[in-house]
Image 1 (tube, rainbow, N blue to C red):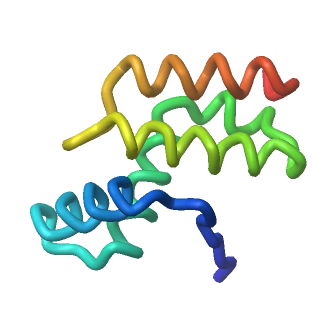
Image 2 (cartoon, helix red, strand yellow):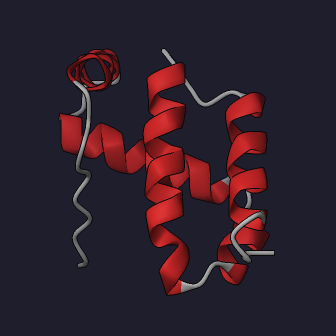
Image 3 (cartoon, one colour):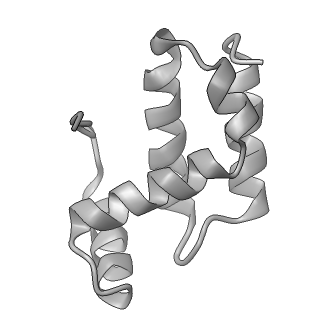
Length: 91
């Protein structure tokens, strides 16, 4: 299995992630992975077009979406991800 490390996570974002993890009976790491899976599954076509160089953009998008969401990702978060990915040659 591969490993992803999120850096620069603010204290408030980490607290929100801990809250979500508790609500879903997961560890913080499991919750972060679940959030990433949901984000990617929302637009599998865009994922196929993402180059290895775009992964930092996806990471930034995930952090932004987690910072904005208190439950599941919203449609606005997904649109922001798609727009960000397209702007960096992913589509």
